[in-house]
Amino acid sequence: MNASLLTTQQQENHVVDGSIRRNINSMIDGFIGSLPDPNGLTSAERRGIIARYTAVLEGNFIYWMTATLLSVHSEDARPILLENLHEEVRDAHPAMMRRFAIAAQAFPTDTDALAVHEDLTNVRLFLGRLLGVQSVLTMAFFEGFIQRFMRYLADLAKAEGSTELEYTDVHGVCDIEHTEGLFRALAAEMAVNQPDPEQDIFEGVYLLRTLIQTIVFGHPEAVKA
Ligand SMILES: [Fe+2]
Image 1 (cartoon, rainbow, N blue to C red):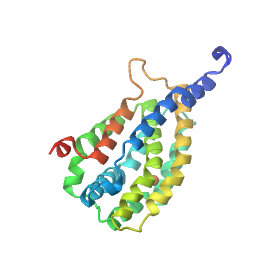
Image 2 (cartoon, rainbow, N blue to C red):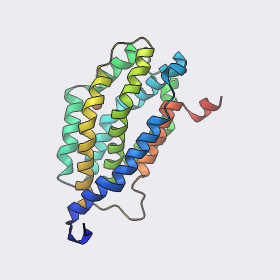
Image 3 (tube, rainbow, N blue to C red):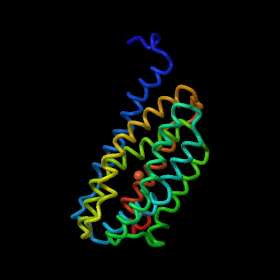
């Protein structure tokens, strides 16, 4: 179709459905494909992944979705982000996350929290810049990753002898719709709040990807040791 015949909103949808979304999906595919076999890990390594994941997700998901809500200019993006937050709070997802970690005997220690400290801080500071498009894109990547990661996280917990899988069951399903919603919010935000062309719109995505790599593979210095 001739791009000049499209409205601005249609053009933004086109970009979001096309190259941006392909890029996000291929980053998630690459990451999921690199995950170590849970049965090839030691119990301590499996526990560490669950603990670092919990150290990041329990206290930060709602915070980061709230930061994203504060960052957007689009009136159409806001209800999508609000609905996501509403579900998180109403269904007490942080409590669900904590139950999952405790049952797998993987509640984070100070060592687990400090292993992600630097990368976590980088994502917090980035989202604090309140850049609408970049923040929504970062959370779209996050939702897409979480949904694809749930089966693996459940396998780690099962290998640790846990049967408490409500967190992974719920997020393997609800985050499919959440990811779709975030991409709709991204299209809406891009239509009204174009990022500075000097800025890399994937900056937050890359910072979050680094954090997720640290969750799975541990702190680079710990990996070397
Ligand atoms: Fe959640």
